[in-house]
Length: 189
Image (cartoon, rainbow, N blue to C red; front, side, top):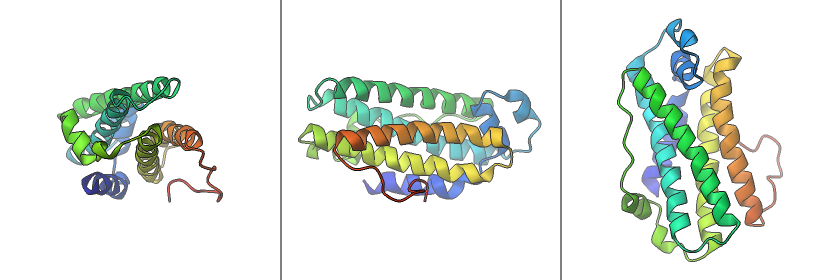
């Protein structure tokens, strides 16, 4: 699981460099994007890192759903969360294309299975634990991007993505019987 953690750290570390134009494209605000100075190659690289994380989440939920370990209504919830990640993927891919880049492709499902140690999943709790770890990482990655923006509306996009990830994490943690984080400001640090 080391390469996945490294890519999350890379996203957090470089996310502050994402231009206002790239985020404006994610928000569907092309007029804002046209008025912003941008480094398209850097933005494409950062957005592709985010896209790779979304591919990972989609495939992690696919592995969980296909494992036979999830019972209803948890299975339905996993499919719903996977749908959210597909929407994130589509928004990121569209922004990359509008910047003239080529969206990174998803790996094969078996590559994600190997990277995520899916063969170690033995119970519904194991699947939920994996999903919770990935969602928490995504929450922190997206929150790491927000401070780069001087315009609130641009930071809103990253905030909305982080909010989805935080919701996913919170629901999964609750399903695992974990308590809510005790300290305030527990995400994004």
